[in-house]
Length: 280
Image 1 (cartoon, rainbow, N blue to C red):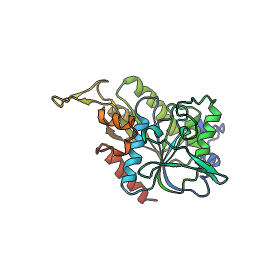
Image 2 (tube, helix red, strand yellow):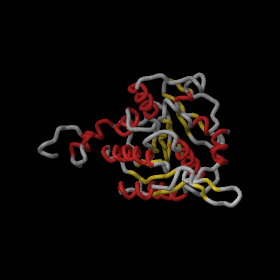
Image 3 (cartoon, one colour):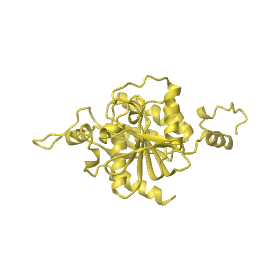
Image 4 (cartoon, rainbow, N blue to C red):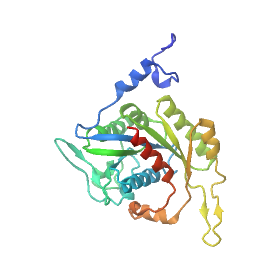
């Protein structure tokens, strides 16, 4: 600990015993009937870049590979996970806790939309209540044995991301961005927050990089040239993949059929996650 330590560990870039202790003091244990091996948070600096899409695809791919997979939808005011998986039933619970809703292929999911009477009911809550709800999704939901839990984070660096990073033992984060320069600037804020909170950054995914012309198969860069290389180099993180705009994928999401997704775009991340589990 530095002689000039002001005890503000969240704002400090130095590593010390006091900082590590401060971090673990906030950690919450999952439900007593839950055993979760790996927790991966998917973040972005702003909304609309495909964070929920990447979360869903990764959950689907790991599930296909035989791993017990779950999705915790931490985007309380803009939940889209239930819609993408076509979930109609509501979550139920007992005195022991809440039970997640299973997708058609067996992925366990918890989202605020699984608790609301109507999917279109707005969540008009202040930040602390929203953050506490996300924490309860971790502590009060009976997840059971899970190999990989993916947390679909809300955009930005506000109450919920701070609560997740302080309350849940996150093993790593995946950053999602898009080619626009403005988005890249905002992504830097999310990356810096993760580093301040001492959360490992597994890499960065750039979404909506191009669309292929159906006639000539040429790649058209609707949002301009990719700058993922520059962002990755600037922050010393790994470039994981560049995702195209794919109409069929959008259709699957709209119809609640994301589990029928077929493409090898995220295979690199799948291999990386499998290797990390073997290290446990």
